[in-house]
Image 1: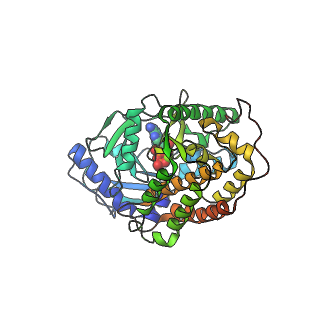
Image 2 (image 1 turned 45 degrees about the vertical axis):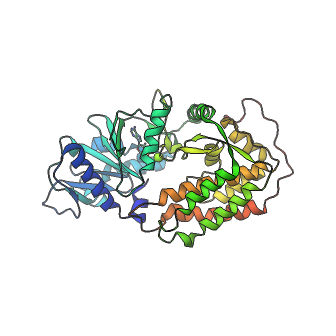
Image 3 (image 1 turned 60 degrees about the vertical axis):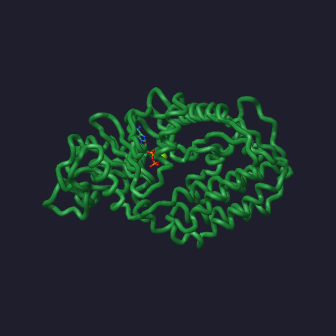
Length: 413
Ligand SMILES: Nc1ncnc2c1ncn2[C@@H]1O[C@H](COP(=O)(O)OP(=O)(O)O)[C@@H](O)[C@H]1O
Ligand SMILES: [Mg+2]
């Protein structure tokens, strides 16, 4: 998650200081703390840059930092790429670094061996510590965040060792951290070349389709929706100003819509839960699927609908829902790779309502945390789109156009 969004949503620097200080104390018996503000003459300062999303010790070599900033610096548009590369070069070395990547924190004592060369990547529920000398990443649960997210990452790695996820090298007894190898690749979102992008998508989808086939179960649709509603209600009282967003009434309406139609049972599987191009990491040899913290049992069609509705970027989601429902052939083709059936007999509206309910539960759970001061930009934008989606789905009548029969290869593109 972007540092800029985290700073808007929570007391991020406090959470960072506590998380990393405690982690260094418990794993390396370190006696110091990470503190702010960084005074010029005290311990080793940590700088941060909100565009490249890096937190790093002052004085770190620009060549190392540029490796981690590559994801930011690469862009399909040549002009943007040049501008970004120029920014990265300036922002991560003196003299521009002094004001583009300011000192926010400091180690109060010399950090444990090697730790003075770690780069930190901030996340929603964890801090990723990149040890570039040992070529490993430590993923540390952020203070105040639910245990659930890191546990999901660990659980999927141990239950499905054949999935293309970076393997678990080691983990804490209480699941508060784990270590995995560092990969040298680029997310699919940053690749250029449409043939390669298609082939990589196909790889990632085949892995997920295998996961669905292996974990599929039938569930009562009513019980599945009730479970989502209970999870969404948990946001009341835990997220400041949550009630003002109108998420709960929208979710209740979705639950009614999900019940209205021929489907009584629903097929559920282990899903990824955040299947988007930033979470497909491509190295030369392998198409890795990363970021399993939202993985759980959901409807089989869930990951495909995340992609159809671009649910990771809520603005415009209601328009995309409208488009999808008015183009049944396109929609059927886009979800075919999951192995789920989408029939335009009224059950498709139920399936979309279930998806929106599951996605609401994900957004609400993502926003819950001890240091959280507001619902944050993600949940706030999502709730606006959700209200528009629910209004559209309530008024929706099936289009007269029926989906065209699909060829076996269709839906994989
Ligand atoms: N094993 C890895 N090796 C190198 N970089 C990684 C690895 N896993 C994730 N990353 C990078 O770390 C960043 C955040 O990872 P991710 O698990 O997707 O967290 P977030 O929840 O912040 O999206 C991404 O930019 C990704 O490219
Ligand atoms: Mg991610």
